[in-house]
Length: 108
Image 1 (cartoon, rainbow, N blue to C red):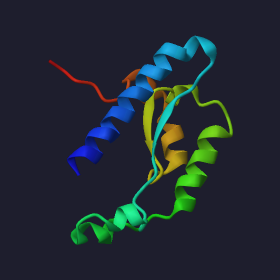
Image 2 (cartoon, rainbow, N blue to C red):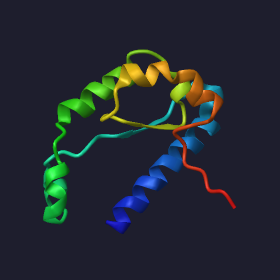
Image 3 (cartoon, rainbow, N blue to C red):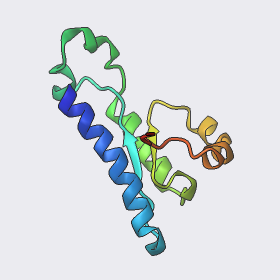
Image 4 (cartoon, one colour):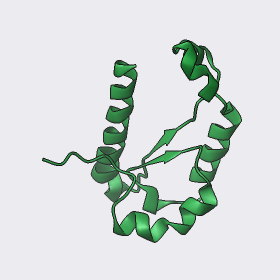
């Protein structure tokens, strides 16, 4: 799990950097969590995690379509989970931008 979680964090940070470095070219980069599905990889987790594998690949696909059907620049460089209520997420657009939410930052 440690390698998987580290890789997920790296993807989130890579998304943030990609968004910043290519914004002037119109690139929008969003890190999408596809949920927990009972795939071969999901089922390779310890058995106590299997009960949380309730999502479907269709949920992730529907979220990806929602993200791409219009330019959502307010999500550029941010993390989105397919498990979230997307209309509710849209309502929070201003708060997400104003407070710079859905990004991973290290404070020292």
